[in-house]
Image 1 (tube, rainbow, N blue to C red):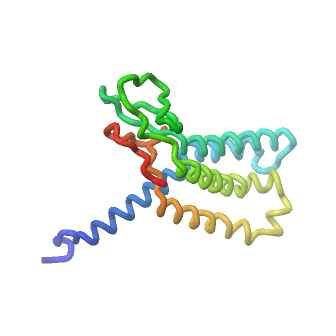
Image 2 (cartoon, rainbow, N blue to C red):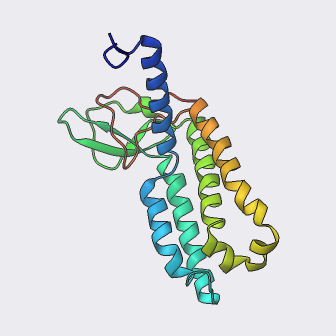
Image 3 (cartoon, one colour):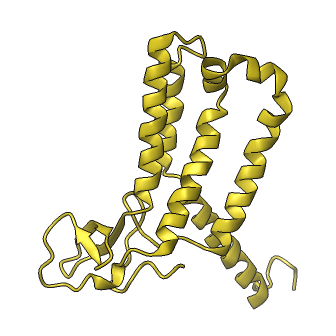
Length: 193
């Protein structure tokens, strides 16, 4: 029997499942649409780093808007109702505040948790590093910084990414917010810290 034909061992499956789960948690770190929006609009709004005053204001607004979006995504959740329709809401201290009516379902298990603030903070930090150390942003807001602090610009993103990724692997976000697959039942989707 060759190595290809042998079934994977349970420890290999466990390691693979843990790795895939961790990658899934990392993907939820930043909303993909928000990062895409920033990457698409930033060169336009910064005039490829050749900023005038209006470009600085527009780019600042874009960074603030995308940062808010990253934080807000940490405070959304979803569930599938009895008719099979995905419903979205915002967790509160009393439960999920739905954007549509759900008079027959108990959504109190979707309460706001400390982990939501934790994930929002680190999502904002990661986005800030991505946005503020983008070459166009550096040239626009602090052009002298690029030539004098090149090592910091190269080292800071991987360090922040590694620290944040480690924290998100240790404390995964179990919310299924806007843009992520919903839970299949009305069980609480947020069981993290």
